Amino acid sequence: MLDHTAASTQIQNVLSELDHALQSRNLDDALKLFADECYWRDLLSFTWNIKTLESKGEIRHMLEERLVDVRPTGWAVDEPDFAMHTENTTEGFIRFDSPIGSGYGHIRLKGGLIWTLLTTMQDLKRYEFSRPFGAKHGEYQGEPNWAEEREAELSELGVTTQPYVLIIGAGQNGLSLGARLRQLEVPALIVEQNERPGDNWRKRYRTLCLHNPVWENPFPYMDFPANWPIFTPKDKYADWLEAYAKLMELNIWGRTRAKRASYNQDSQTWTVVVERNGEEITLQPKQLVLATGSEGSRPYMPEIPGQGLFKGIQQHSAEFSGTDSMMGKKVVVVGSGTSAHDICGDLAQNGADATMIQRSSAYVVKSESFMKHVLGPIYSAEAVAAGVTAEKADLLNASIPLARFFDFAKPAVDKIRELDADFYQALEDVGFLLDFGPGDSGLFGKALTRTFNYYIDIGTSQLILDGRVKLASGAGVKELTEDSVVLEDGREIQADVVIYATGFELMENWVSELLGPDVANKVGMVGGFGSGQPKDPGPWEGDFRNLFKPTQQEGLWICAGLIAFARFYSHFLSLQLKARMEGVPTPVYGLQKTCQSG
Ligand SMILES: Cc1cc2nc3c(=O)[nH]c(=O)nc-3n(C[C@H](O)[C@H](O)[C@H](O)COP(=O)(O)OP(=O)(O)OC[C@H]3O[C@@H](n4cnc5c(N)ncnc54)[C@H](O)[C@@H]3O)c2cc1C
Image 1 (cartoon, rainbow, N blue to C red):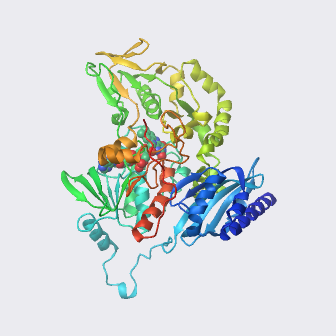
Image 2 (cartoon, rainbow, N blue to C red):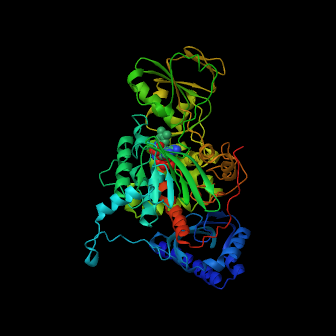
Image 3 (cartoon, protein in one colour):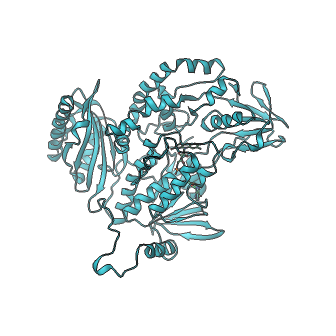
């Protein structure tokens, strides 16, 4: 407790000085409070952008541009019991205020100076969160009731009235954003090519369960019931998505595919052509949100010589629905990420002869180890009991500057590597090509740099070690013959079925298809931050490209990512859209430059 008090006092002293310096617009004094190496990540509060400033010079420039508008006050430690000293830092949650919106954040001091600072906008002034009244009392008693209003809204939106926001895709991102827009009274319509929300999960392979635990997955405004399983089976998750959409009163058109869209600069309106139950309809929203899947949701099928000759079945992992027809068959699975492992496990347990083809290395982590050492401190029953809610955990994650992300992630990855050394050795002994992510940052380092070849082990690794899933590693597929798969090193594997667990196309390809190459070129890469990793080339950007923030195309927004990402960042996207609808000035500081994936 004393420790918390001392930490809180130390932070408050720095915040008070910062408050004074910023109120008196004395940038020299403000910058003296920052360490030589310093990062300020801002989510809207100062920049109307999601932006990381990575030096005193960058911070000075931002303040010179933005301080006059933002006029922050009231910097204070929030919840002093969470302030603490760690080995190298003193850190805690903070709050502040401004005429534009209330702010919340996190700070880390090193040597008494600010090392990392996170500022986020919590509520837009005049549009703060409030619980709807629901009932009609007094003079309003005779008005249409809730059901009648809902019916009218559903029949009118997109038909006689236009949505302010059109969201394409009713996955976790589209629905989370939809719920937040509803709360902010922003008219939004979601179009989904499947019949019902959740169908994209219903169609995935039968053994799939969420790999992240229930504590990581609450949705905006709605946590899971106390008896919800730790790992949600995919059909149950699909039902959750569908129920969520209904309970959040989202306006969704199922069986509606967005086909093309163009932006009219004069009217600042999109023209979006959708096909609904076979009929083409034109929608005209002011804002267009792509929530079509982290990687564009479109399966990536490699082109391999001989595919036309092969007499057996070929399918993408996204089409794999089960092992019924595969018992006793020789099945070659191309790839070594999550889908490849899960499918091989299912095949081997159900009497098929499964071979995994691993061309390049993958990161593997045992589920128990991952839950304990990586997620445990922030997303677990113990964390919740200690007061670390999903909201707090999200802020802690967001507070890590991407420039230092690998360093933050490495200790847990190293620890697991040491504790599970025998497991990793055994995998290497059978020829599995292992890596530990960029800078040994494990799974998250890979995902953030747009590389998805990892596996949270729920059993298939043991099947590989036991030889029940055969492994052919170190070479890619050279060609297919009538009945076999030939590898680049000459090995030939007999096959009745080939399953391509080769991932999904990147989001930018989908942007191009829907909006045309000009807009796609203008927008550039989606996700990544310029780390220099193969799928995330430079130049260095330092924050996520084009996700949940303004893009180079006016009126175009993109959201994607895990449930925790959808929950956290949908808040900031909803505030940006609300502000624009209400005519609140939103000068964007530091709009990212276009970066092409090459
Ligand atoms: C095998 C597998 C396992 C996974 N496990 C997990 C996990 O455990 N936890 C986790 O958080 N994530 C997991 N993911 C990743 C997860 O699926 C994505 O991160 C997530 O789905 C992203 O959500 P989203 O809402 O952005 O996209 P999606 O869930 O992909 O939703 C996009 C929606 O857009 C629709 N759509 C696409 N194009 C159009 C169009 N033109 N018109 C209309 N609708 C369209 C699609 O039908 C789809 O419903 C897994 C992915 C796979 C493939």
